Length: 71
Image (cartoon, rainbow, N blue to C red; front, side, top):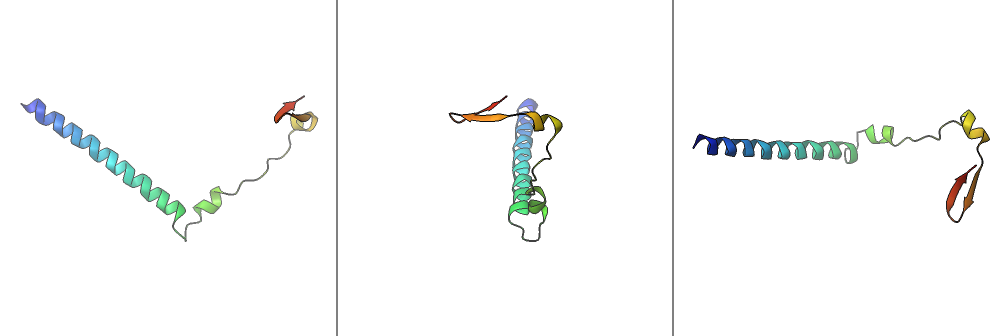
């Protein structure tokens, strides 16, 4: 009989854990995407072109039928 109660408590714990995780994920996305004062989105959206490396200077590319061929 106690095993039945223990299984119910464990199942309840798992449900609460999933609900709490969903709430945290929702709050995080709301903070990033909706909050006007947040500068986090502008920080992660800055993508720059990487500098050319020595190997890149000597590589030749060619586009054939939509495929990029690196020689």
